[in-house]
Amino acid sequence: MEIIAADKLKKLYANGQGIQSLSFKAGKGEFIGVLGFSGAGKTTLMRLLCGAIFPTGGSLQVMGQNMLAVTRPELARLRRQMTTVYQNFNVVPTLSVAQNVYLGKIGDTSIFSTLKNLLWLSPAEAGKIARLLSLLGIEDKFNERCQELSGGQQQRVAVARALYSEAELILADEPIASVDPATASLILNLFLEVKNNGKTVIMNLHQITNAVQYCTRLLVLEKGQLAYDGPPQLFLASAVYARLSGEKATGVKGEGVYA
Ligand SMILES: Nc1ncnc2c1ncn2[C@@H]1O[C@H](COP(=O)(O)OP(=O)(O)OP(=O)(O)O)[C@@H](O)[C@H]1O
Ligand SMILES: [Mg+2]
Image (cartoon, rainbow, N blue to C red; front, side, top):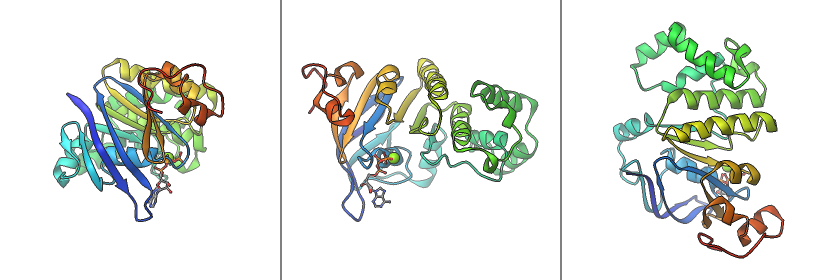
């Protein structure tokens, strides 16, 4: 089954900015990198995919759900199958790191159980969370409140929360923007592992080198339109790459290059 099917997808804000027209499909197990200049529409696309905002035209199916006619219960069900790493982290500042990670599975249980589990994390869940924090190098922050962490540490909490959710679809909006290069590689390798386990990852990135190295496919947005959809290697030879990187393209246009 297709995980995402967008056809002439449009999301125009009142000022006329946003996604102008976007058509693409994504299948299970893809690791898609979304690139583009600041303001190109990457976050808007991410918010459309997770149902935080809705299209103003065209069509969008996410895991079989028509996002133009989704009801609240359908959206809640859909959200349990996906997880989002937001550009601004969206951690709860007054909760501990472990509690924030636990919130990745919110929706699996009733509100009462969630609150109970937040206060008394079971040894099994606490163990899982501790392992994830350890993989991300912030195991010592387990009980610290998120408001006491640096930006890069909060970003790692947001990544841990997404990985803890074990969702089918991971949407990550610049998940390495606030961390050092070594931590960035670590995070990208963790997402690669998720992809290798059959999950679908869609990630907004500014780092072209990382995108080419890790992603199986690149989508490049320019002014709310799709400028490139294809394999990473061909992207390096495209005019779009030359524009985005400020460098010369390495070769001729190839298959999958639209501009
Ligand atoms: N809530 C909003 N209301 C009006 N315009 C908006 C809104 N959100 C975004 N835009 C506009 O839509 C366009 C796309 O914004 P978006 O945040 O999707 O870009 P982006 O590619 O994620 O950029 P960045 O790399 O800086 O995160 C921009 O021109 C922006 O000004
Ligand atoms: Mg953005």
